[in-house]
Image 1 (spheres, helix red, strand yellow):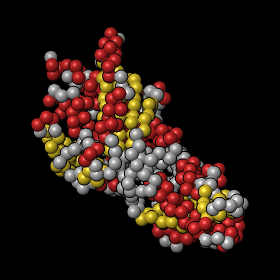
Image 2 (cartoon, one colour; image 1 turned 135 degrees about the horizontal axis):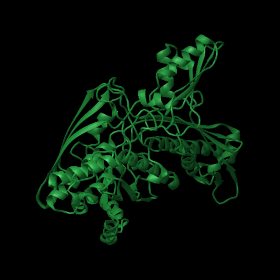
Image 3 (cartoon, one colour; image 1 turned 90 degrees about the vertical axis):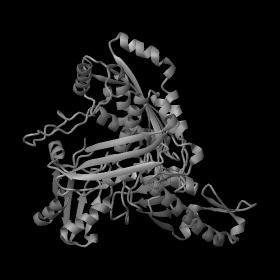
Image 4 (tube, helix red, strand yellow; image 1 turned 180 degrees about the vertical axis):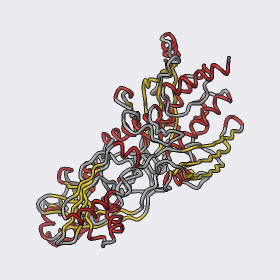
Length: 562
């Protein structure tokens, strides 16, 4: 939706480059640009302002950016470059190009005993990133109790554009394959799909649970999430809704599936926090907001830790001169890592302030209490504020972290669809999610993240597909006239529920919400669609579920039966 664009400047007096560009982290760009231009890192400044959306495309530094910096130096004037959408379709990284061959072994009473997953992923003509392929391996432990798991991953060079990470980066693929296996197994065994899932979901009593691949799930209520999703679908009224749909010539189906995420991401992050005597707390952090509301949620974290008003907090990012270092935003990492170090910095600020307040009030630490931004001598009305202490001497703290703080967001999603068997047109009637993203800092932001993620996953399930001509290799879906994106009338009103079980890996208990909606959406939509067409003997559907594809699947099943 948002083509790349950039403005380059060169200061001849200071021998310094400046790039204004959308990014998911200015320091990654800064280092890449310095290397490409063969100049010291400090000779490059990168600024990313308020831009919407990142989704993986804006993690790596684009080839055009060092070129326009070079041109700005050569021309001795600013140089601007704006990529068109057609250029983006032709040359920017694509995602979700994967072939899978999977098998699920089931023992007595429908218990899962083993899972085998084999993946062949397209890396394109020029390998850019193997993150998706590595995530396929790391993510292979689903939310089900499966004793044995075998996984193989292979990348293939092709003549298509390079593929790289897109929101979720491997997690939607794994969840989709596993959930479709469960659907097929239930149908073959004659067990209700919901019942087969319920029997095999990890019990809370087994936590911490170590998967066959060595991942440890530390918290979560897998069965409770699933049951809440089922309860939200009014299954008691399902027969009546099916009958009503049949009277209108439609097939109605429901899909209720589970998901698990295993965010990876860069382990390093940094923040610098200072308190101004003018009544401000300033924090510079190396993450990057692309519309996720970091200015709000980080301010809440810092305000809560320092016991001051959120309107007294200023959050800075997106300027490699103002922010010393950092790894940007991707893979559900911002609050897990950024929030953690902000909390640590706040604690150090309070410790510094306490030492200076002791001197100012001439008391010992035992006689001093900190609350609501004030240091108060116990049993008296003598006190100084955090800002008054900062007026005497600077209050500053720098915190860094170099570990990923692993966490596993989990949850369930359910949706109901109607399909017109004569045209193959699919209508999404309702969509419900129950998500455990750990501690929720801002419920509205989390809901927005889940809505956006679900929309992207539903778009992949129903509409989105890159098409090349098999003979010439010409891209046939090179514009938004040819490539389908979900619009408002393609989507129902989402119902989101949160069932928080804090993570043990970080002091905030955060797991991550940015990719939760995407990780489960394709499985939910396809499960509902196959449920709707079960009576027509359609067992499987390949995405996207365009009317033509669904229509052909129905006609093929009828031809086989006939």
